[in-house]
Amino acid sequence: MEEKKPPASGSTQRTNPFVALREKLGALPLGPELPAAPDSRAPKPVLERVTVRRERAGRGGKTVTIADGPGFAGRKLEPIAREAARALGVGARGEAGALVLQGDQAERLAAWLAQRGFQRVERGN
Image (cartoon, rainbow, N blue to C red; front, side, top):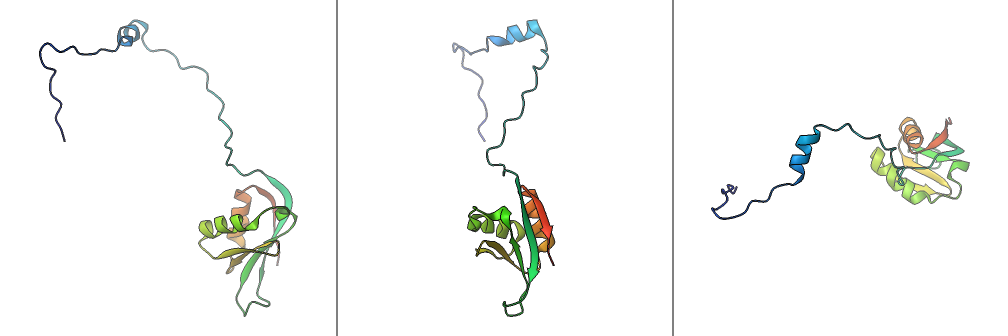
């Protein structure tokens, strides 16, 4: 680390012109609190129903968790699947209008979807 050297004789040192003003005025009260700016990345609430259920049929005996319903209509499921996979630490993919996760993740997926703005998350079988 470098040590600060004292100014050499004959050099001019810059001062803040507002220091004297601050000393005269003293502590000023804080202004009104500004409203928080809306977060453009925040998910918009989805009012349509999404059903979360477990399934084993046709999957070689492996349990998967499926989320489907009108709440996913018109949405690209691959980005949602990638986010769910990262957040929950499991494999996920979009398949025929449904979100499919590996393993029995119904409780965790329902909570994650509710956190993402899906307001009507229902549990199936």
